[in-house]
Length: 278
Image 1 (tube, rainbow, N blue to C red):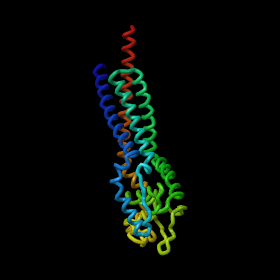
Image 2 (image 1 turned 90 degrees about the vertical axis):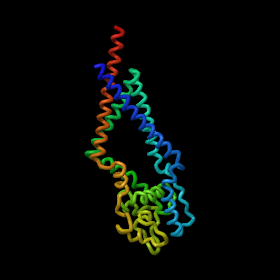
Image 3 (image 1 turned 135 degrees about the horizontal axis):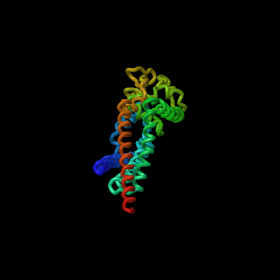
Image 4 (image 1 turned 30 degrees about the horizontal axis):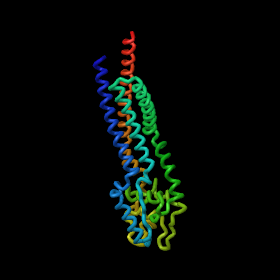
């Protein structure tokens, strides 16, 4: 039994050190995205320059796109920071419990990890069996802002900048398609010679003049009009459902092993203290 406990403690230390590294990375990335926009600007500045050049060629020479990635993904950056902090706190209790055999730390670690595991199992079931429950909810939250706030290629608010950037960067058009922009209250579409069907940012090549035919007469050859930005980004981030579900399942098994080992360590510490009193 002593040998198994030693192996279990080593396993806990190794896994928690891995959690510690992941937590530090997530925390650092969140801080950089949230507060270090100047460090990331070189990665997306070419897209902004291209949008501004198209605006200038189309007659919008006085428009400056003040784009800030931290404003766009602020909530995601905050999620990274909070997740990183949670992992750091979790590893403190995990390492303290495994190395120092502190009862309260063992208990808190087991409780925290059990809550995470329960939530992860629920997510895996939903993700594998009813993925649309997750994706449809996200889509429903994205579309209303387009209808109320999207202003077109010359828009300088967060919604306009975000979608112009995403359309060009991900080579797509809207949450599901160009239809998400149809009827947007602030989007000017009635140009005299080229009434717009899609945003100009959905064009495969941004207009270099006042010829907006790629957006007024869109086709698969000149426009990303039928390409879903959500699907494009979802595939890049989540990828193959079977692979993602497998990774999540393996993670859940590792967490279950950690819970069992830490619980056994707790019982061993408790037993030793009872024996010492006896």
